[in-house]
Length: 330
Ligand SMILES: C[S@@+](CC[C@H](N)C(=O)[O-])C[C@H]1O[C@@H](n2cnc3c(N)ncnc32)[C@H](O)[C@@H]1O
Image 1: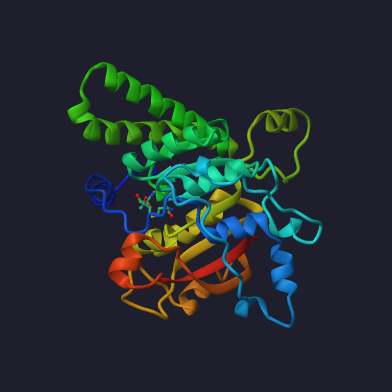
Image 2: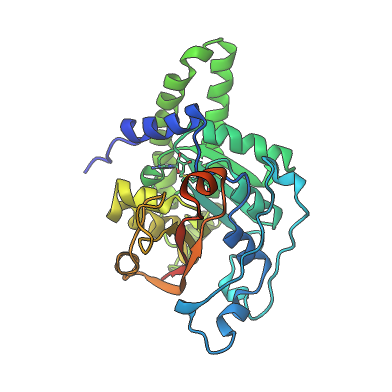
């Protein structure tokens, strides 16, 4: 059966482009999510072992945001924490991480500052541009790539190397567009170009869908060693999963499963329906557990709150309630 046409669904892309064009970004803190910061710089094994608390009732003190400035470069250098106890709960240092719906890229910048290669994917071209500028200011552009794409339509076998290729193609095309001085038409051309590149990348990724742990010998093995491994070691979500869930519930979970390598970790930070009508889309605990019932293991699922933004403070009067989960892809 032919692949469905890749590329952002026009109404979804237009909705998010509109947020960025209007500069109305109610979720935007300019900093990495404090839960991601805590997870990477503290010892989650100690959280889990603390007292008699069960992971489901875990309370983790939140660290302050990395920075309230647009550029994470202004913040004190974060220190990664990995000890023998928590190493199995952490993505490998120097491993490949992906942030879905990366927005302005502050969480990717944090991942890169803490030693990982970080790929950010966002459907909005303005988000991707902002993210690139942010990691350049933070001095970690060499460990980050940003791709404008619909996460739900990323090609089979998508991996760090594929993200690098796509970014390169998108940057080259953008440069050409700028040279042609067609800035006023850039939005439409950019969307078309991103779609075209995704189509090509689907072809390129087809060769990397084999499970590298499966038996191989001789020429097969040599070929495998030369090929990048499909997927990522870690996928980070900061307020994007509930958006993808709204767009395509089954597709969102299946996409996360195939974007992660077996044993890979997923950090979710998503809306919580115990305080409904309070900002972002929300999910119930039952929905979350059912969604990740098969092919996943919850390391923890706990309540938390999204970091404060001017909108949450002034319009909602509080930080919206969130679910914070760490899951392992089986
Ligand atoms: C609530 S914002 C969160 C942004 C960022 N993670 C943060 O914490 O600041 C959701 C982001 O998801 C992006 N998005 C929405 N649907 C998407 C899709 N199907 N594929 C990729 N990105 C998407 C939006 O453009 C937006 O940047």
